[in-house]
Structures are given as C-alpha cells and as structure tokens.
Length: 263
Image: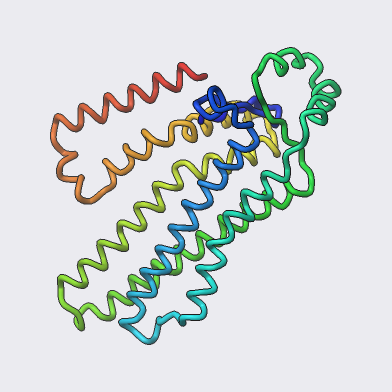
C-alpha cells in the first residue's frame, strides 16, 4: 500500500494491492501502517532493553531489576495496540466526511466522489489521544534508547579489562548494530510524524515541506537500503570501490527522478 495525502486537506487515499484488489478500506490501511510503525519502534526499544539487561549483568552498578525489565517490556508490547487503536477510533463515517466536504471543500466534491475510497480526518478526542501517544512515544523512545546506549557504553568501558577481547568486541558490535537499526527506522517514522504536524499546524512553507516529507516517507524502502549500504561498518571498505560509488550515484539519480515524477 502507498498512502497518498491530499494536502492541505486532512484526507488521503491509497494505491496498491490492498485497496485496488482486496478492497481494504483506507482507514484500516492507515491503521495498519501506524500499527506496523509503532511495532517496529517498540520492538527496537525491547531489543535495546534486552541488550542492556545482558550487558548490565556484568556490572552491579548499572544492573536493571527483573521487575522493571518485565514491566517495561509489557508496556512496550501493549503500546502499539493503544497507538493504532486511537487512530482507528479517530475515523469518522463516510456520511460525516461528505458533510464536511460539502461544507468546507465544495469545489472538490466531485474529485472526492471519483475516488474509489478515501478517508478524511478531523481533530476529535481520539485524534488528540493519538497525537499525545505519538509525542509521548517519541520522547519515551528517545530517552530509553539514549540512556540505555549511554549506560551500555559506560558498562563496557568499565568491564573491558575483566572480559575477553572477543566477548567485548561482540557486545560492542551488537550495540552499534542496534543504533544503526534505530537510525534506519527514523528514516520512515520521523517524516511520517512530521507530516501529521505539518497538516495540523499549517504555515506558508507547508506545501514544500509536505512534498519533501512525503517523498522520504513513501520511498522508505530504497532510502533504508541506501542508509544500510552507506552506514554499516562492514560495508564501509566495500563502498570505497569505484564501481560502488557509481552505483550510489545511480541510486541518487533514480530517487531524484522518482521525486520529480510524483511531484
């Protein structure tokens, strides 16, 4: 599925197999998208906590208790359901959507009717809950990952002389890979969250900001592969080859052509 926003109207539709051939409603597709994004981030949080628990056992000063760990994992496991559930509850019926369109956007009524399916959102109680959970989740994830990485680095530095070099290097690489995965998830999640704020809080720069953010969000997969190829330490030496540099330039050209085609 590929969500297509109708900025500056807080509405959109979707292209892809789910909508075209399986007739899955747009609101369900957007709920699924928010669920998957939240699951990705929260699973990464759990991975960081699990790795932190393993490393912290080497030093009693930074050790995390079993109760705190289990409670944190339980909350992170339930959070995606609350997050996507509030977004689903924020949807309004087609009748209410058409009333709003006829009242606020009468010139676009026929264009909306020509779409196979679409969804229009308004700021109601559940949408407010959704934005609150989104903001809280971003702050919580940043603090959880930032603090756990800092503590893991400090712990590894303290026990460096107490464990074998191979074990220390294994934990160090694992932490770096987790940080890389979190950076990669931000490529798709941060632009998507930013789009929501651009729509809700418009400005004279909203149109250009929306175009750039939508390009990054909807082309998440190739950008993710590009990020891994450039940032993975195991690929750095390989990326210095002339052949790979030319492939990177070709990828950039393709992405730029895709952006020009969409906008």
